[in-house]
Length: 130
Image 1 (tube, rainbow, N blue to C red):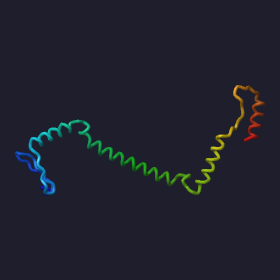
Image 2: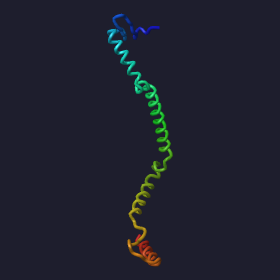
Image 3: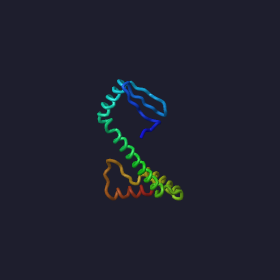
Image 4: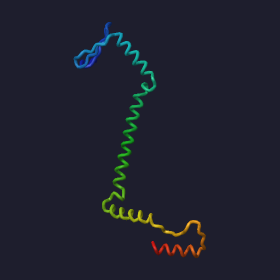
């Protein structure tokens, strides 16, 4: 069956391509040259496997995007800190933890030896300042 809006004709002078009733003529020698180059390029592995690679890449990217969206929705639904009710309290607790990080919880001097009783005394004094 011939598609009347899109077809080729071949003659001894060349190839004519008809698209929506508009002809485009290619000389036979030019067409043979293009045919030869096309077949030579198709034999190069990158071009030979392009359609398979392209299909695989589109499929892989689609699956990856689907997984990312699914995980993002799951995280958004289940994350405790995303809940506006708890968000303010959690931020306060985080701020308090950051303040505690700067606080020295123990006291000792580098290079100074002391007995267990002295060490315990220094720690009691430090505990009183914290």
